[in-house]
Image (cartoon, rainbow, N blue to C red; front, side, top):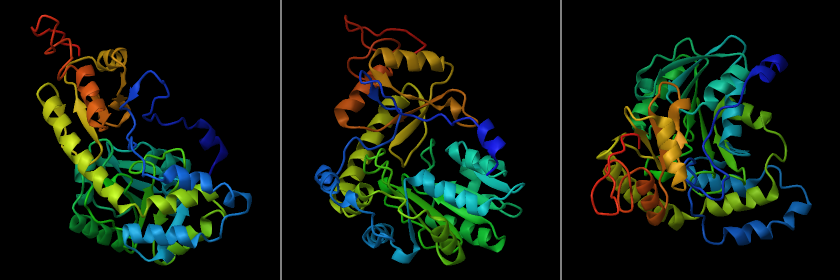
Length: 357
């Protein structure tokens, strides 16, 4: 990694609000956590007084059971982004090209540039049909952030085969796959899968995740991993969460139900993309995006400005939360009971007309 290049690269914008007066729909972490996880985290204090086991076999076994792979293929990482960085660093050298989806997570391009590589963007909807030849790395995010697009497993496997044929490392970011019934690509030759506890288990601050890779690629990831790269509390909570099958099933059903309810309500006013993720991409059309975001904040709700995603210029992204919280989002965006403004109820029962919101 070049020092001058690293110093010159700015930070990628992300969702998440730390304003206690705002209900945060700008980040996509589950508002619920598994029952018992606080107890597990606190109990890990005693084990934190010594170095964690190396390698952390219990965590690797739980992760392997969760995604359906050999524990030997699991490489523990402090969050999904650490897994992404490790994969990019091993695949991309100075002057290499990387095939990246757009719009998608901005950190892929940033990590490629940190290694001296050059991003080559392709429409996220067309990524599996792209030619990987000539690229050191290809990336797929499934479901894609921010569009929510999920990719068919057979199509993914076919793309993985084409990547192997051209010696292109395929990185599959499955940060949101746990919200779906789709099967992981973990254990597929030539593929690095990145997973995290951030989204599904509602624990972004724990910084727990893992990569999965086989063969020489897996050996390289294991060799590059720092010793003791996860804390004892991170390992303990990670192992516990990855075995909470009931929580996962309940979360999937709630998100599916509420996502469709939100989409149906918003779709009468905005253009809303289909999604398999715990968020929706909303095109506000000719309304002023800053005004839409600002009016939502005035009503106590933070939504994600999606214009920072490549190719989007009239969009916001909204998370799927609990039912009552989702009702507040609808009202803040001018939809549903208690709303005011364009198409929203006034005090006298009539409808208002504020085209900016």
